[in-house]
Image 1 (cartoon, rainbow, N blue to C red):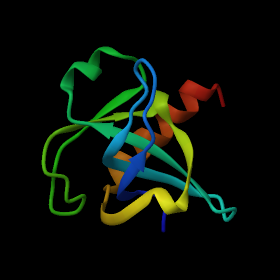
Image 2: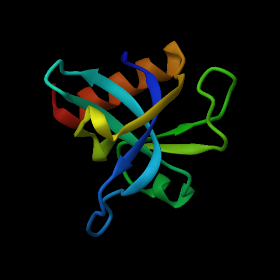
Image 3: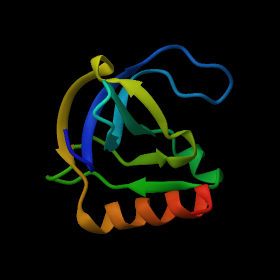
Image 4: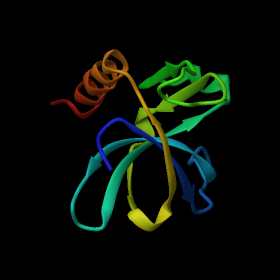
Length: 108
């Protein structure tokens, strides 16, 4: 598993705006501890009203089926067993945008 992989993950039921269920996500980091850090994706374009989001358009590289929103404000660590499969990768330009948004959001 590598940074930028697009994975299908299973998230346990959340509360409020927390994402849950089987969904695509972008791998941020493999922590080598049995956990990975991911950014959940949603196809609900209403999520664009929130800060720290990024539109991801489907392409041959990421293998997404539809226009999605990366919910960077919901970045989280999950157990590797929650990864169902890796389906694609984001491109370098998208990865740079994600890195910049994460830096701004975390104040680093």
